[in-house]
Image (cartoon, rainbow, N blue to C red):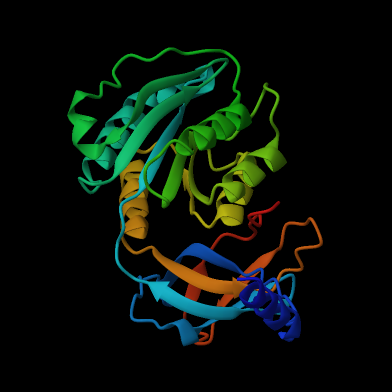
Length: 286
């Protein structure tokens, strides 16, 4: 027994000492949509059709997932006093939009003014028939950024990794603790597409914040001037955009020793095609 034990120890000591390596690979997934010059959606694409950069450095595109997966969707309505003239048509268009969702999608409804109220918690789109938007609380102040942060937080409880938030507002934030930067970073951390619908006059200059929210997260922006058919058309375009979203996977070459938020750029090799994507993300260890 002693001889066997001695031989085992000898063999362990005689084995060559192999170096140990730690491989830290971050695979990033982005929800993207591709359109042609006529703004028609294009899904006949391959991984090699895309170019991706992080902070100006080229990244390796790995794969695409083209199948339409279910979405978790938040609908966030501005119910401050300045929105009251628009709300009847907003409620009607929102109801019709919810009926356009796939039965496997899930959604919740939240409102914001001087209060943030959850009117309907997350549930399957099949529950939309029970939703009543005819009577809602109105407040004087507008906590738009607080509402966006609260809605994104609620989406963390969702079942699906594909997540989107629709904000219907006149684009004016008058109170609250959060600011535009916090709202953007909250959505980027949780990979939430933000679609914004601005109900206001053509002369207004309130669109800048909502444009930045949409562009930074890969969503879309619509300006509406109190006209119901235009609002419904915007909702229809959003529903179509969701139906044509797919997932782009790439391998990040991020230096994990640095705590930073990489800026992303995605481009199509074909100059006739445009891609919509989230402009930044937070690494898993951020």
